Image (cartoon, helix red, strand yellow):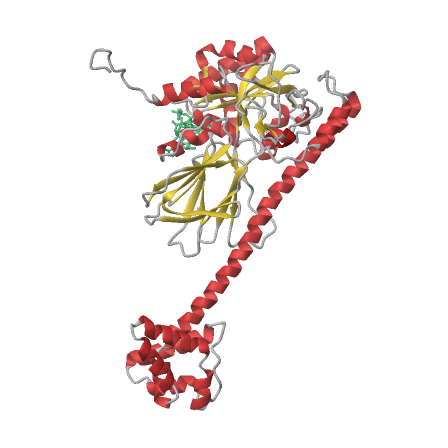
Length: 570
Ligand SMILES: NC(=O)c1ccc[n+]([C@@H]2O[C@H](COP(=O)([O-])OP(=O)(O)OC[C@H]3O[C@@H](n4cnc5c(N)ncnc54)[C@H](O)[C@@H]3O)[C@@H](O)[C@H]2O)c1
Ligand SMILES: Nc1ncnc2c1ncn2[C@@H]1O[C@H](COP(=O)(O)OP(=O)(O)OP(=O)(O)O)[C@@H](O)[C@H]1O
């Protein structure tokens, strides 16, 4: 008699039959099978009930409040009846235990596979970064072989080799150690004599060599200050802060900038008019080559065919090469236009001069009415910049964890938001920082923000405002359903992993600078770290003055009428 037959015999009520049948069905699908002999005697049947099964039964009994009953049931197992009763009454519970055990084992395997996939993404990012460093170094050496370091008087080739060999640090700043490493950062590394553009328009003027520039770090506004990478000295075993990190960064052209890219807010008449005026002024008064977006090119040419000097692009491949052609980006719009401009560059970004034609303008300090003076100052240089870090975000799909190539990383200047989308359930997210568990988010979602983005969505969700030059990553919950979930600011060198657990009730949605919603299903993860490609934005005055001005004027930060002198005093 098979176990099912035994059970069938004992199960007399329809409910019991159902239970026993479903148990049999489960058993046939359950991968770790309960050892069941084909035609057992009652003795072997009892023997075949594993220790685990007894444990389950014992715990089942103790759960029901009678440990003593459990032991008496164990002893009575020796009787046939008790065995049948046990099988009839507990099959689902015991099989469930196996199923739970099995599914937990599967989850562990899945987790391990996902970790591998995530490690792969991080490794790919690292490999890309090392490749870039290597290519920069090779290009740099090549250039030096050809013509030496003409622009940096005090740099010798020995220094160069020494500096090149120091290219071991991970930070974006240290990446840029080059022939000007002692005194600043040279842009030679990203310059090319010839631009391998895929499609050259016949009537378009070829864009010349990109202008080179140098970055230097001033100290407390001292514009002649020197750039140093070592913020900490530990001579003679004593740790001291050698340099303050909050230095103003200056950009000084070493050759005249020749090409400007315009990025403009769509559907705005005032922007269109201003763009047409600025483009003509730059061409006629500064002899600058101008690139515009295809939409703007159409608009300008429809308006006046004499704009035939402007250049544009036809496809994404050409966008990828823009950074090799463009010396400067001019944006006309609000913060959203700066975000849009940054999103076009998946690698290095030329300096951005942002004119304010929006309502807030945290990242758009230049007044559009004075564009001539502003552009004159920037084209002549030197000018202060804010080096705004971006976050690179990799989405790791649970379903694609075995595939070699993961989805392209997405770069954000403000933040990546993981929220509940249209779902009305709480978002449930597991968060890790490097390999340490951070927390589980249960609420509307989570914002992982750059310090530039600290005044945007993160601020609205209760995060702190942080000077954009501070190297950090903000970790800000959105409406957490917990009283103690305060926002965090983490150091810029960490890698964050946000995972939708398998037992989440629904999907989460990731959006990048408020765009490109991507669904994250249970098992999917998002990995974020600081990108090696910051966005250098030109300052009207300097980084700190511009930042404070934007929070005063844009947000009316801490605006309160002053208390009058007239009243009680100490
Ligand atoms: N509740 C909120 O505050 C909320 C909600 C969704 C998105 N956002 C923000 O909107 C950004 C997208 O901007 P958009 O212009 O494309 O969308 P949008 O047109 O909806 O404008 C969003 C507003 O955020 C401001 N803003 C953008 N970046 C900022 C920054 N770094 N500092 C201060 N203010 C900033 C813009 O000036 C604008 O007023 C997202 O990155 C996100 O930070 C905010
Ligand atoms: N060149 C562009 N192409 C496509 N979309 C753009 C472009 N520039 C800006 N946008 C989009 O247009 C929207 C509005 O832009 P922006 O924030 O600059 O203007 P605004 O809303 O008038 O300014 P503010 O937000 O300061 O009031 C943003 O969502 C942005 O992504």
